[in-house]
Length: 416
Image 1 (tube, rainbow, N blue to C red):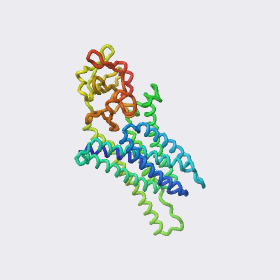
Image 2: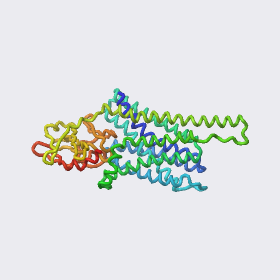
Image 3: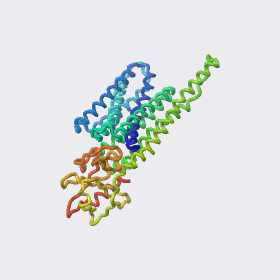
Image 4: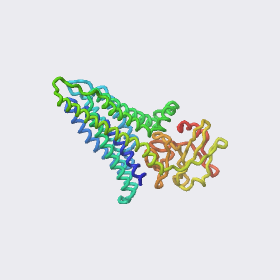
């Protein structure tokens, strides 16, 4: 029961935070702007982003293949990066006139952030609902739904604390905190875009694989970069100098000013408490959530005459099978095999070009990515793209499934 709760709570919390925290700080900045039009644009974009995310998930569920998750999120991320770049150069530019380019960038960032992360958030209850097959009053579904609600609620409360703490900063420190938060978000977005370009075959070559393999394999830890950027906010708040005592203040007035400053710092303390809960949940909570969803143990295999062979009798049951080959460079190269139907097999590395070497497991007769919980269509396993396993060459002969030893050796770097 705890596992089902955390499997919904953790991604809902993390996606909600990546969406809510930068928007909360941006709203504080816009509220200090003399131009009301920026705030109106922000609120309008919030509405558009929310309803667009609902529309996209409805189309995705209703048509299955009409919207590619990879294309949607890649395009949204690209537009978000462009908008964030514009904001970096124009948001703090003192101007008596309304900056039209800044207006457009604010709308673009808010909408595309909501489309991307809102889509990811809505996928959680929708996926749980589809898996429940109409049994919505059973313990498993209710536990998952409770985890989703609590995760979204926690992200909202944390974003509100960030908003209040940011509002307590002076302008220069608010600018610094916003830049740090934006840089953390942009780093994550750039890595995601590079992964998509690699998956699409646009970025190829040993250089990109050597550069990205360690990052992809540890992509789950990128959320802690966001957490670290959030931590800058209370640290900056607590380091603000004590309010000056103006000559016009009498003792009572100055005590009130000091009391207000102390009160504002409490929002920073609230952010720290929330961060401790976020970090604990994303680390220890993830371990508990994934502990029971163990992937099938990998069966060691060796090469003989340049080929790694597996008896068909061993893999013809239609279930997921994992094998591991010890490469000459020391890496343990894992690959999966599953009978798709008839005499057709799905064969690929136990890794994908988006999520890295995190692996797959079988759930309810479906192959599922262990990192992002995406279910694979068995018919697509063995083809490149999306979250599918990276395909590898194989042949069927003499009652065996044969994988060339060179194929596994050349992919060893993915499992560094």
